[in-house]
Amino acid sequence: MHPATLTFLAALALGTALRAALAARQLRHLAAHRGAVPRAFVGAVSEAAHACAADYTAARVRHGLAALALGLLLALAWTLGGALETLDAAWRALALGPLATGVAVLVSFTLLGELIELPLEAWRTFRLEARFGFNRSTPARFVSDTFKGLVLALALTAALGASALWLMAAEPQRWWLWVWALLVAASLLMTWAYPTLIAPWFNRFRALEPGPLRERVEALVARCGFRSEGVFVMDASTRSAHGNAYFTGLGSAKRIVLFDTLIERLAPDEVEAVLAHELGHARLHHVGQRLVLSALGSLVLLWATARLVQDPTLFAALGVTTPSAHAALLLLTLVAPPLLLPLKPLGAWWSRRHEFEADAYARQTSDGAALGRALVALYRDNATTLTPDPWYSAFHDSHPPPAARLARLGA
Image (cartoon, rainbow, N blue to C red):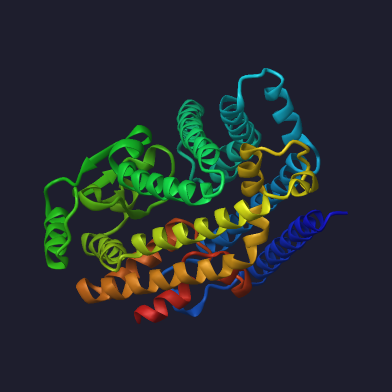
């Protein structure tokens, strides 16, 4: 057996086993702590709400295990199972030419992947989320959102795929550098365009209405010296009961978005504190840092791919008998995730560090106690478990555990 085949299988097996073991730890931890509210939350979170959060988190972990199993089967089917080879051969038989064939294979791969994962997403929305009272989407809205997302994914795949394949043919020695520049430019463009061109296709956004809350927000934004398109309220309640807020965009297209469900549940000073946290991400350049890290990571991956695909036996080792530029790109998307899985805890740690930094910024520019109250309310209303397994959390969670976050705030 080729060493590449052994490496791929070993990475898949070890990664799947590790994630399954962590999920089992999380389930045991949730069950063991389900009956007692942590001391820091006594009086703020009821025993019933704490137990519900444990059950909701456990249900999501089980759903994640199903997704993990599906991902494993798909990775094996596309590669060693010959599905990618079959798809490629079907399009090659039409004799469309290298570029058209490559784009067709890339788009078909994306379409099939989205359709295969659709039942799990529907189950999550209409069974899991509905069971705990969070789903507010309708079948018609779900179909509409799915269709829009699919159109966007296929359009991006076709555009980026055609550009990348053309560059690979035009610059056979340095294609990896040009494709990297293309991906960086596309990433920056998407980050800039998302708030004003993409997000409004799925949700409705309105400017924050005049009143005490807006006055607080405007004062905070001025105090922080922040410039953006403004603070917007999103109609999140049409799809989910979860409350949240986020910062997005680059340059003049920066936006701060508050879910309407967030505004309904929090007091004005608490909304202000949450907004200060989001402003912290902007002022501390967290979005830019993540873009830079992503760009560096993609550069390394493309450089390595350019070196490896010079050996035709590597394609055969991963189930593709006819080497091609588009097959190399698809194999990269299939092989890279299991190989890079050991880096996931580092990424999660870095994200949690950013959350602590944004909390500290909010404490300096707003009211730390109000942020603490807001976080407790969000934990309670979003059914966030207060007792995650430490190992599971360290590996997966982009946000700090609730108790650690409140302790750092001094709340």
